[in-house]
Length: 134
Image 1 (cartoon, rainbow, N blue to C red):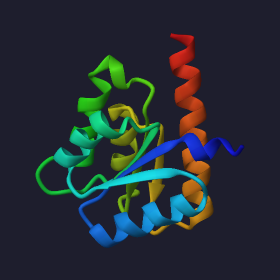
Image 2 (image 1 turned 90 degrees about the vertical axis):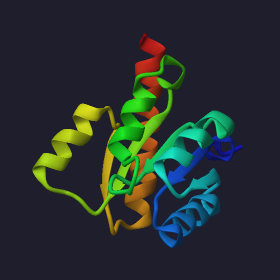
Image 3 (image 1 turned 90 degrees about the horizontal axis):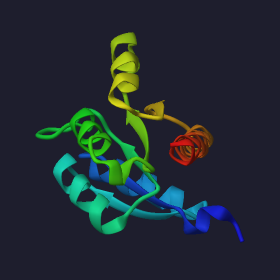
């Protein structure tokens, strides 16, 4: 059985079309997905959906992706969740902030599906190593 069939990916993006399309593409590759359209609903979905990874937009109104990531990294129960920043922002300051906030990967939109899938695999592997070493 393909390992992706048991992996849950939460897509959090205030652009509902982008979130829905991303989730559908991930489902076509065997992932189970859920979608949230704001940072706050994304945090709520983490508790109910228990994702292995989150594809997280940074620039959202209200609670942005950095705030969601910081909130998750502050809770030991969510140490195992891989975080992928999925954003149109690719400048040096953003990259530094993504790393400092605790993201495992940074994917710049628009990204092709192969890049997204590679980032997911890398982030999941990295997070698995970090949590098993702890």
